[in-house]
View 1 (spheres, rainbow, N blue to C red):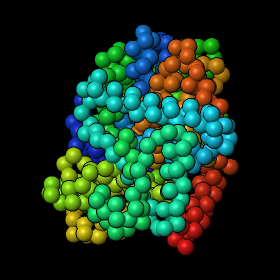
View 2: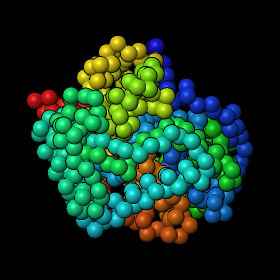
View 3: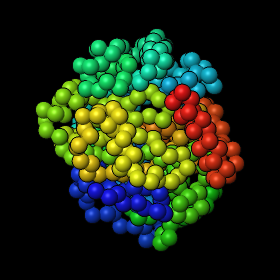
View 4: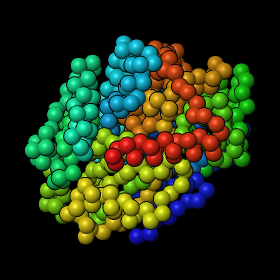
Length: 436
């Protein structure tokens, strides 16, 4: 099935996730002058979560989304609900701050997983949530690196992980590609768009005024900021910026001083035709989500209707790969050669926002403008928690906000064109190292 490319925004939109949900009619765009306590920019996990938390505390909240709720990375990602920030992000927090702060950040990520599960139960969100996650090594050298990460994680964060050598891994995965793995019983996976839409509906019921198809064109700063769209504006006491890599696509970036601290990285997924239940069970008997520990990684899981969902990080230059389905099929059959004859029915993708150090970037500008960005592929759990952290700070408790705002973040060098070229060269260098 051919994929649909949105050339303006660089995303492939033939999404299995969109095809497997029934959206309500879109909320009306902003077409008035509105006064509220807080204006939230961005309708993904972080923005919706923050708006929900604030409304539950009695704040008047308006949420502006340029497309639809969950349109961006929150509705098209791999669906992996993972504790922590990845090895690179955790290393950065320890090296740039302290082991004590790193432990606090880790504990907040654990709280984020508990928050996710609590919200699923509280709001009745059916998003096919399952526990169980595998991190995989494709070579013996990668296995040694994975073992080192596992031992450090167990020692420093008291987090239980299970080592799987090659024979033990075979009971989890019908693939000969991997030398070893680590099993995480707490992390898991879900249908990311169903989850985001469920949060959006909970926010509406809590009193959040949601405006879709309402791209922000300008942010006027001051004691009472004004957020402007093409047809309306919101004056407020505080602003929350949670639009990540798609900010600035429709007008001025609302906070240009933080724009260069993240880089858009293209990642793409395919969904096979439905497999038989027996074949799906043979492929991944425990129905865990999985990814390897390469820098440019493969990730995969089974959907509730027995499709293999397979993803890969492909581009660092904001362009969609040519022959996307064929390239993704080659990656998929490299892991599961037994799927060579299985049809691919959907292909889609988009951008995640990556920071230089792979740690999340939370902060405040001019006293009354809060922002969150840079989840670096670990946003499904933490973005929802980050929204709560921002809401807590606005409500007067900045203790956890201060943990993350203390993490230093550097700008990618040069303008958009220069830093994109530099990142492409760097990623090709590391890919060559991994191949060697």
